[in-house]
Image 1: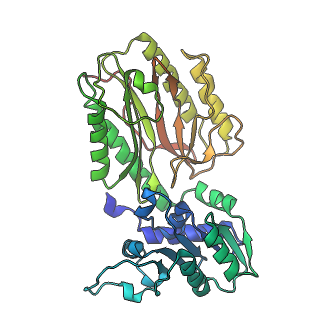
Image 2 (image 1 turned 60 degrees about the vertical axis):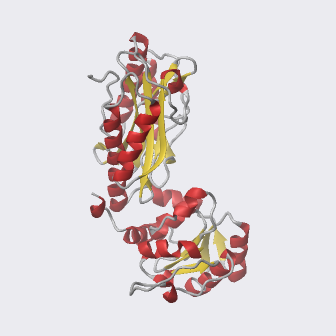
Image 3 (image 1 turned 90 degrees about the horizontal axis):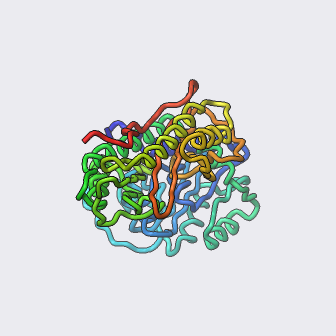
Length: 391
């Protein structure tokens, strides 16, 4: 249930503690990356869904300051709780008549994002020397360099990667929830797979289930027949026909944490070639899952999948990867690819997959999400993997 999920602000504090524990050479970090802002604060702005949006976070282990537009301040306050951590820029009119924390308790609004960042730096990390710089917006980077001329701006990409690769308990709870929510949506949608139903109806069922469960749909791929070979295509009003393949590739978020899973089902019996090819992919994914445990190189997991698929009905099977990490982004470190020497660790969360696409024929895939555990893995997605479902 949503009510049992971790408090976003508290999880942000735990992530800050982890980040600075793993990066002891840093006194603070300044970032304008929306993913890292969410990671270190717990707040994720809806405005980023519409495109690039000027926002920044200044954080040390002890405190942080969010720089955001005036229109975003109320939503940020709902999550963060402390008005003194929210530094606004621009003008937006909101009236306050209640007793809850209000705009009046926030620092005065600045004219521009750079001016708000300058003021927040002075109040938050003035005097600190070793500052991680994670800034892509030139005006914000210039503001930081001007405010802390004697400080060293240090690269932090590797530090964020290291911190985010192993999930905290609260992060695992969120990933379990969003994965199971997506899994439920797929299970419900399979009841619609029959001749005469169109792809959009199936996509709508998936979207509704995820939304009612508190999630946000990020991608809903429902493709059928020859369209199933189109890798990242939107659903259309194509009617399902007897013998079709239906490929579902679904991703959602809950409080910023992602799901990504895929299934392939037949509309009736898609024929012996489809059955044989699908079995090869399923056996490959199964072997991939069986190879997962701490200390195993990601490249070894990849090779296990490839060898098994090629031993079946797809001897010429080719892939540049058979999975990836997942967390605040649908695709993150580590990559399960042929040259990856990254050792799997307890607490990593992975998507494992074996897709196949053939233009003019169709496409199929099976993809699952797992947590790496001391003894192997915990499977988060359990929807049926059977190509032929009982009618």
